[in-house]
Amino acid sequence: MTATPTPSPKKQRSPKKTVLITGAAGALSQQVINRLRGKYQIVAVDFRELTFHSDDIPSYKIDFTKRVFEDLFKTYSFDSVIHLGRISSSEETRLRRYNANVIGTQKLLDLSHKYGISNVIVLSTYHVYGASPYNPALIDETAPLKAAELTMDLVDSVELENLANIYLWRYPDLNITILRPCNIVGPGVKNTMSRLLSHNYSPALMGFSPIMQFIHIDDMADAIELAHKKSKRGVYNVAPSDWISYQEALDYCDCTAVPIPSIPPSVPRLITRLISLKMFPSYLVNYFKYPVVINGKAFEEKFGFKPKRPLKEIFRYYREIKN
Amino acid sequence: MGLKSFLKDTLVSKELDEQLDRIEKPVGSLGYDPWGFNKDTSKIVFSLFDSVYKKYFRVKTNGVENVPAKGPVLIVGNHSGQLPIDGTLIAYAVANREKSPRYPRAMIERFFPTVPFLGNFLNQLGAVLGDPTNCARMLENNEAVIVFPEGVRGSGKLYKDRYQLQRFGSGFVHLAMKHNTPIIPVGVVGCEETIPAIANVKPLAKLLGVPYVPIALPVVLPAKVILSFGKPIYFENEELTEEQITRRVEKVKNSINGLIAKGLEERQGVFE
Image 1 (cartoon, rainbow over the protein chains, first blue to last red):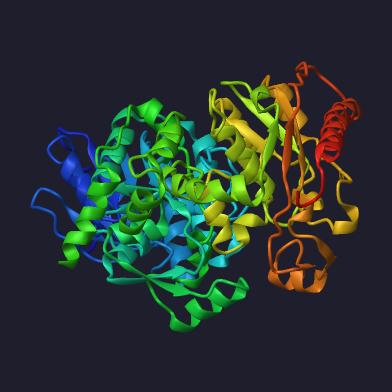
Image 2: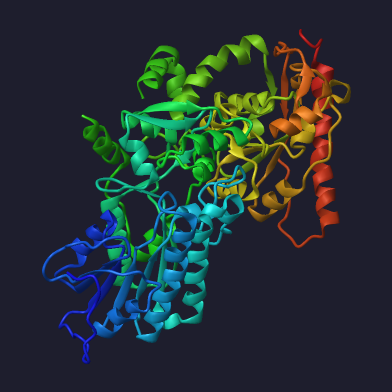
């Protein structure tokens, strides 16, 4: 476990294929690492903190935008990259998110191309579609990405996608698979939705309870493992064919909804800005007002993916942690 | 959840429960579909709505059997009455018919999702944002879809303009042609008199982000409602100019006008 890699004149070759996994400090990465260890030589990297996985998994804390990041590629002969190291929209400042998510991803894709990597998985989010009252249900992958229209705080998510898409078509050899999951929840997940479900009291916009989709972190890790194994380039939504309204989901998690006035539209944004809740950022307000229901059929059919954990099991976990 | 189960057990009669269970509706593990339809909510509301339908509006239907028993169908009607009562009455009529009941999905105006409580409530009853993508997916799923091509021009019109059809959008004809779907015209008589509006407060509507704020009595009047369903209209799927499409739209509009005239003739009085 080191903070920076030590480039050696000769690359470290492993009898197993080598996978670089970013965002190693996150719960999802750890799940993916658990699934791939043994079958692959794994190298873990995170720009936030140094994490320990096991003696056979080298782990690094590196800022992707720095030159030292390339030393990793000089040190190891990577066969594939699983890029999960995205700072979510509720973390860090807008500038830092942009640097890490957009500039960092660009660096990662450039290096992947330079070092002849032939399998890249990029984790995106359903947030890129934007929450609008005019959204149809079952949004498929060809729908325009409108999140940036709503708020500058989601520009990095959309830009990351655009960038990955450009590389997907410009460098077909990279075999980039972009995954746009719905709300990832479950043990260890610290995103906005997971925080909301974990609390005894969570905000909800008065009179609005949009239909939502949730995927268990274990199912999402399975989806990433499948995408890595089958390597079929393209953009895919990842979501189960099951739905529930936000406030009913809170009910199932034994969480009491705290109503926030919702009209005129500027009021909830003002209130959330004033109370500055990390678990309910003002720029995500529309996602608690209008549904963004995505269609995960293409991924299911192409990769043979079937989520195993039903909604009731997901909500049971949040109920149990409260007791 | 608890309250919903309680209300369902208390309010929904065995007959209604069985009647609505006869209608196949694919929902997820917790009773929702991707558009927000919820079977339990719809059963509760339908049970409450039964008296409203039969006793308050004393709805009379003509030709409800013209709606096909299965397959995609567009039920196209005139829109009126400020609130989407007309769509709910049509849906209830088709869901409650003796033979081959169906659960039609009403396409609602784009502003409804922005209205607190009402938007979600309508979704749970099966109403869906009036978007061509949504409508196309519904037809692909062999659903019966209620469409009001006048949109807010119809629902928000003033009492003085009652029973004067406003401009129809042409999207429904494109969809009917593309998806080989019959159109059932419906003439709705009575909803114009449920919430008669004398003016629209446009500045307030703009402030609230809604298309209209009517000046009207704060009550829904018990006007007698007559729903007249016409014979199916079929359009060939062929390459047409917008002008030719407009002619097809006019054909549907004329048919609805005829059904409205028939309903008005049949009606003894607004509240009789």
